[in-house]
Length: 203
Image (tube, rainbow, N blue to C red; front, side, top):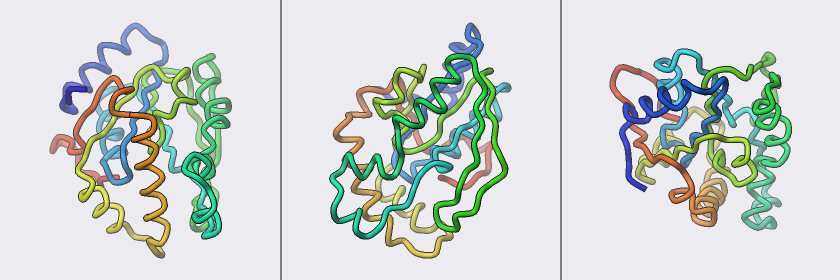
C-alpha cells in the first residue's frame, strides 16, 4: 500500500465526504504512532468532524490475564470489538446519535457524557480500529505508520503510574497487525508526523 502525506489524506477525506451525510473513518496504528495527533489535525481542517477515541473503551488486564489469554482473547479483553460495533458504529450508520461515559482505566473515574451525531466525518481513533468487526460500519480505514522505536519511546514517556502493562499490550497489538494484515486491508497509509501547523502531543 503506497504511503500518502497527511495533506493528501485530508484532501481525500474532503472529496469523499462531500457526497455523504456521514462518513466513518478508522485511524489505526501502534500505540504512540501519532493517531490522535493526526485525528485532531484532520478535525481542525475538515470543518464538520467528530472524534471517537477508543481510549475511552480500553480495559486493563490483570497479571493472570496476561499469562493465560491467547492473543485474540487478550485483544477482546482490552477492547470488546463486537460490543462497540453494535453500540457505536452500527447506530451511527443507521442515522442515530450515540452517547457514552468514558472510564479512565487507571483511576476508574468517569468523564462527562460524550455524544456523537451522525453528521460529517467521524474519526474512530485508536489501536484495533480496523478490526474486522468494525469493517461493515466503517467507510474508510487509515493506518498511521511510524517507526516502532519512536512509538515505544512516546508511550513510555507519557505520565503514568507504571509501564508494566506495555509489554503485553505491545505483543497484542503486534499480533493484531500481523494476523489481520492491517497494512493490506486499509485504504490509506500515512505518516505519524503531521504538518507543523498543529502543536499537539503525539499519541
